[in-house]
Length: 217
Image (cartoon, rainbow, N blue to C red; front, side, top):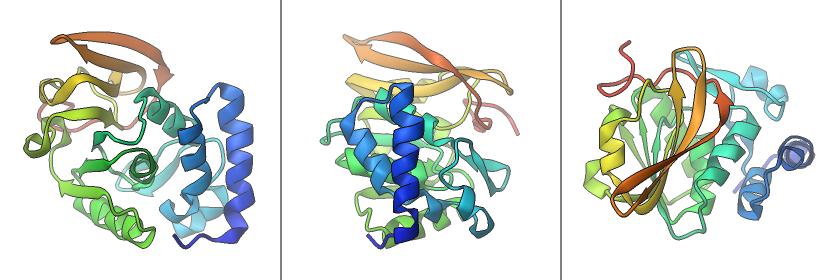
């Protein structure tokens, strides 16, 4: 993994200043956030802001999430290294890269093909070789490789897409922002004995989840 040494201290500062003080405790998540070069996933003009405490635009009306939100959502999946993970909304590919450090295999879906291609190129350069990409409607999931131990949705939805619930393995966790077009609550849904238990992890704000089981464009 070819890293720019100029940003190593910025990553350490991000972890120590933004993540740990806000309660991120999972050492695997902390290690991944300290390793993956966020500066590679933002537009060149914004690389100086890559490790700041806010989201950034990546084009096509999409964003790369605030570092803390990436860490929070990743921690909420409770990954230990052997899981099969489905990500809905590849976007910049940064969250995908973080997941690739914590899971055995990551399947990621992005409806905007140009973003998917760019993310795939960056992850290949970083030698994140356990990721499969698909340009598709993410609200339909990826039935071919179901069920998944964990599913992450990186866009706000009006409700939980039924196909994602169906593709969640027994004992699996689904993390998704649910709400209206301007603000959501981050929910964790756990499947146990065929039933779904829901937890509220707090308020958040994401771009809209577009698709058959999400918002219309």
